Amino acid sequence: MTVVRSFGTELRLRRLARHGDSRLLVVPLDHSVSDGPLMPANLLGPLIAELAGSGVDAVVLHQGSVRAVDPAAFGTMALIVHLSASTRHAADPDAKYLVATVSAAVRRGADAVSVHVNLGSREEARQLADLAAVAEEADRWGIPVLAMMYPRGPRIENPNAPELVAHAATLAADLGADLVKVPFAGGTQAMADVVVGCPIPVLVAGGPARDGWPALADYVESIMLSGVAGLAMGRNIFQAPDPAGRAGRVAALVHPGRVAVPAAALEPV
Image 1 (cartoon, one colour):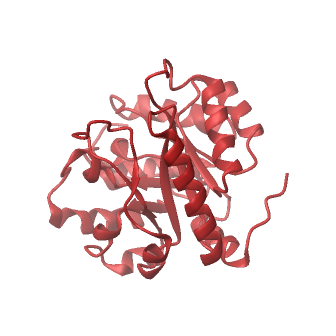
Image 2 (spheres, rainbow, N blue to C red):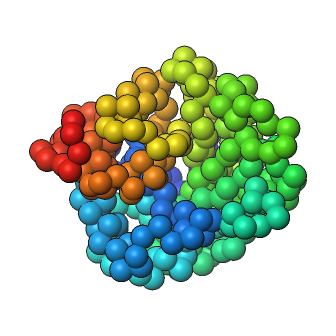
């Protein structure tokens, strides 16, 4: 199935895939809205500059955080502005709300926007409507939409169940997203089935922290064998002892032969 997009959207999607292999390593850095400060404010800019030189294709930021980053970092890396938010202190942390617009993201130089939807949450109906509305506005501006789709709610027993992950992925496509991020479906073959059934590129979430590089490398390799378009990995990179070194190693697995493995890092191989 061929997805028809505007010239602007197609151009920006090509900017996201900077390594020429249609694969992506995205590092979400939007966690401070939901969880509070994760690092001193003066370290965000230097971290993003290091990621830009480590083979990372894009970072995800909220619109306010963009102002603290040197624009030079985005000469070799794309910017995705996240439009959704909630905090862990809310009565229903799964209820995501739009806190920015596509036009605001464009003014800040975004190459794409992202929206979070919790499939099965009590506020699912509004979140789906928000995604569809953002997709419509983004189409007018010619900018891609990354839908972050998580099976998460009172009736969800296993958020990694293949049938749920597949539903989340195709739902994003049906509502107009250009890319979709979902949890790992539990195994390489199950994830491959999700990819085959979805007409837009599928990214897999980085998931919970892995204990050391070998465990994380095994996880990344099993994901990439499924044929996904790439990874959206946050904590396993920015909370590593050497975030740039960790990002470089992951990038070398996502872009084999196109990103060199870092010569040194602060953690054992």
